[in-house]
Amino acid sequence: MNSTHVSSDELYFIQFLSSILLFIIIFTTLIGNGLVITAVITTPKLQIRPNYLILSLSITDLCVGVFVMPLYAYFGVVHISDWKYGSVMCDIYYTITVSLMDTSVLHLTFIAIDRYLSIARIQYSRNTSKRHVMAMIAFSWITPLSATTWPQYRRDSQLFLDNINQSICFPFTNNKINRLNVHVSCLIVLCIIVSMYYGVYKKSIEFKTKRKRYERHEFQRHKPEDKNDKIMRREFKVAKTAAVVTIVFAICVTPFNIIYFVSDAKTISYRHLAHWQTSLWIMYINSTLNPIIYGALNPNFCVVFKRLLKIT
Image (cartoon, rainbow, N blue to C red; front, side, top):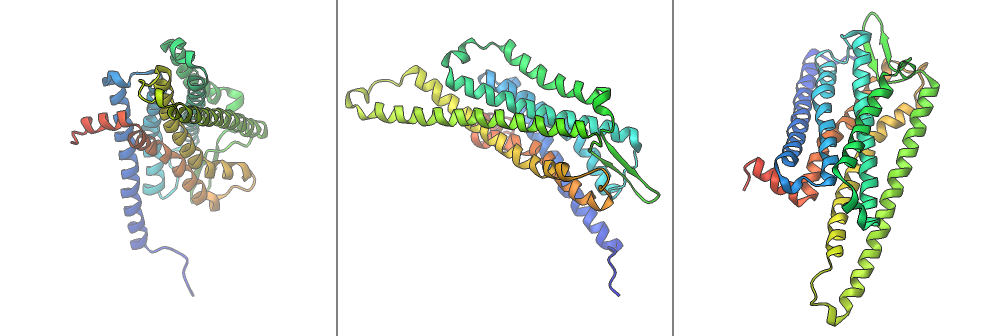
């Protein structure tokens, strides 16, 4: 008769490997986002309007690495997915997780809008002050926190399963109205972001066509590049990085949102734990990847990262 139980040695080995992997993920998240924050704060060249939104997004990602990842790693590895902290702590954990994820979504939405307006309207970059950006950042932080602490929203907002053998904390809501609001909000945000980057794409095609026509004229070829063209090229580069960040975020949160969408409170059980945990970690890893994207696609960030890390 074959046993389906995992031996103690195998369990310890799995715990050991999981601990190393999760430590690397958490460490990379903290160091990477710490580098982004330090780079923007200490480097005047990086202190431009788009980077303030990136700075705030990195603070969000750093909070995920500080407040969310370690607790869930401890829950998954040390307690072998047995939630030992009770329903109150489960509720707090749910609030922090959802607030930070919603904050990230709002940041990405404002970044997409900012990128489109910077390219579609040249005067936008000149007329938009730091105060406007700070208003976007404040809205991105305050709105999710207010929503998740609102009593009506919090009603049945987390699912704490408890029995004699194991306790589990699910980031789930039993309230059908709240679930519908989540799905509709996600759809609206997705439409906004996609439409903004589609607008950026169309503008980039127009810009490239214009550049080709410009270069065909022999007498203009040796003229210095138009100032507006330089601005547009810079804005397109920033938009490219922002678009990649958004695409990676969408990929990372899709598994969780699919499971969240198809699940029902009546059918959730301990059998679903592996699916939930995997989807959550894929979502959390997005906070690890963002600094890597900045370093890979933004030469200015790359140079500062090397300087901070003393890499020649």
